[in-house]
Image 1 (cartoon, one colour):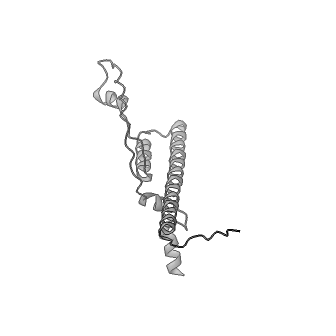
Image 2 (cartoon, rainbow, N blue to C red; image 1 turned 90 degrees about the vertical axis):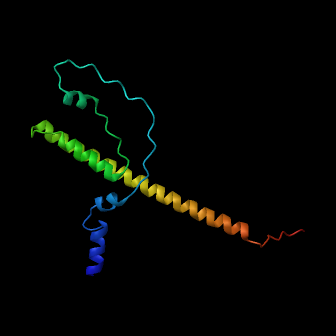
Image 3 (tube, rainbow, N blue to C red; image 1 turned 180 degrees about the vertical axis):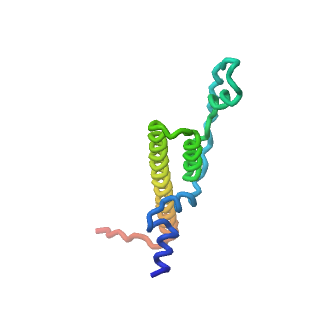
Length: 140
């Protein structure tokens, strides 16, 4: 029983923890579109280089559960107060992260199932090609 319980715990089945599986998934990174980055807005001379960098910051779109988590952590670090608005922002970022992870897992499961079906179809097609039996038609 302890083996089964530790197996459930290690895979995140019980207690429920989808991050165990999400962190281990290795989804292929998509080829980024070569769209031009918009030119930065003109800033008054009084603004510091950090302000300019913040206005022109272009994060990469997360494509794996791990990169979703890293962007989430980065989002949380930008919230520096504990105002009601900040609390709401943290809750919104958390819901976005959870939704993105669910979509990522769904896509990974769909791709795995699709790959399995392709392999099955290929095996059946190969088997049919090598089948030397012929259908006998009744000619009456």
